[in-house]
Each structure stands twice: as structure tokens, then as C-alpha cells.
Image (cartoon, rainbow, N blue to C red):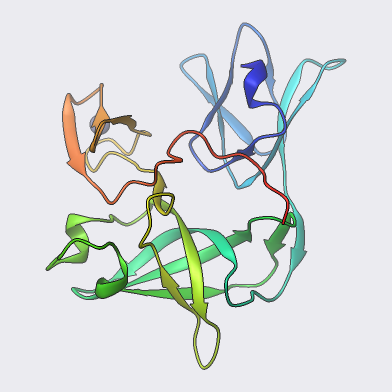
Length: 191
Ligand SMILES: [Zn+2]
């Protein structure tokens, strides 16, 4: 798990095992595996043997061109709402409730009829801000944008990426998403 150090983690990411670490701030344990409960920076406390997920310093605005991480919430046939959690590049978390809108035409280069073919409620997406006024508009067109953490429709466990689908080994179930090529490999980048 050492390779995860200083890594940006999202809700549901595995951050350690019971044998190595105690579940600390921003984490929970299930069946001997420690998961992140929140968005933040993963830190290991070697003295207390704790895995912690620390929140970022909050800010209250995003700018055009920012890369954001957020959770898919409300969904209509052609529009999804994303709760923006943090901005990539400057460790900026979001202090207040901030929503972005993702229109069906801005999901991918492929033609798509229905948002549900690409994103499900609760998915964590990496998206780019294309407009901030009068409302925040997002796009996930591009290979590094899209779902970075998807949860099984059946059991809500985090899913593994297998080529072009997501796979839940508990349910032996595959689900389609617009997947970011950073799925499972998000790292902090500075601007
Ligand atoms: Zn499942």
C-alpha cells in the first residue's frame, strides 16, 4: 500500500488492510480492509499505525478550466448533477455546497442517448469546468475524464476496472461507464 502515499483518494478507495494499519480519520473498516470515507489526501501515521484521509483546505469557488472531482447526484435523461468536492492542482477542497451540471452531449465523443448508460448515482467523476456563470457546466469528454470510482448497482461496493467496463467480483456483475483512464490511479498534480 506504500505506493498510495500522498495520493488523492475518493470515497470507497482501499487505503490499507487491518494487518498493517488502524482505521483513522476519514476512513472505515470492512472485512479487514480499510476504505476512505471521503475525498482527501492519504496519510499514514507511522507512530500510531493509523491510515488517515485528511481533507483539503477549502475554497469556495472554481474557475473555468479547473479539473474537479465530484459525486454524481441527481440525474435526468439528459442532464446529471455533480456535487463538486475538490479542485485538482492546488489542494482546493470545496467548502460549501457546489453543484456542476453535466449535459448528455458533454459526456463523451460517442453518441449516447441516456445518462444512465454512462453514470450512475454515487459515481465519483473527474470532470473539467467549461463555464462558471450563470451556472457551473462540466464536461467529461477526453480519455482522462469520466468515472474514477464506480459503485456496484447491486451491492454498492467499489468496482474494479476491466478494459472498458467496471466489474464487481462479489456480484460477478459488469457495468458500463464512461471510464477515465485514471481510474484507480489518481495522483495529486500541481498546476
Ligand atoms: Zn456488487
